[in-house]
Image 1 (cartoon, rainbow, N blue to C red):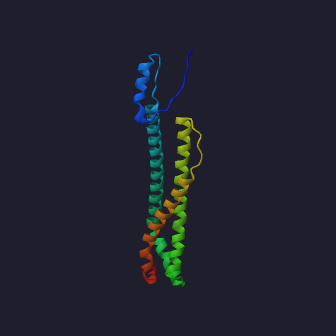
Image 2: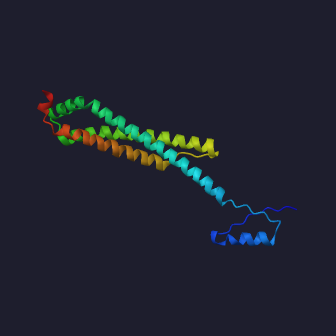
Image 3: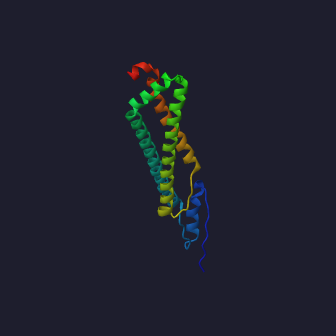
Length: 171
């Protein structure tokens, strides 16, 4: 007869295995903790790769947003000056401009989360044969990070335009 069983021993009691093997020479002991540690390490590296893709995508989206701000700077200055000339307060113009950047940040965060989550699902299925789904935490973090980063950059980029007198820009 051949019998197979498993026994969990806490790390401080691993010395019992040697005693059992000495007492029962036909006993085969297979330690699976090193295997579990190896799998855990591979999965952590996979998670790091996915996080890197997420950060790279978010950084790309932020850079595209900054480039868009710089390209449209003169046009934006003219629009702000025109709005201010027509009676809009600095505060209302700032709200309008910030809402535009918040939407851009929202889109950047959503795209970053989408790409990262799709990569995560693909890697989980192809490499580990695991079936995973959407990660709400990733979507929340991506969206908030995009909104905060692009919104802050937009606020910094348009602050000077709001302080410039409209007549100076319209000349």
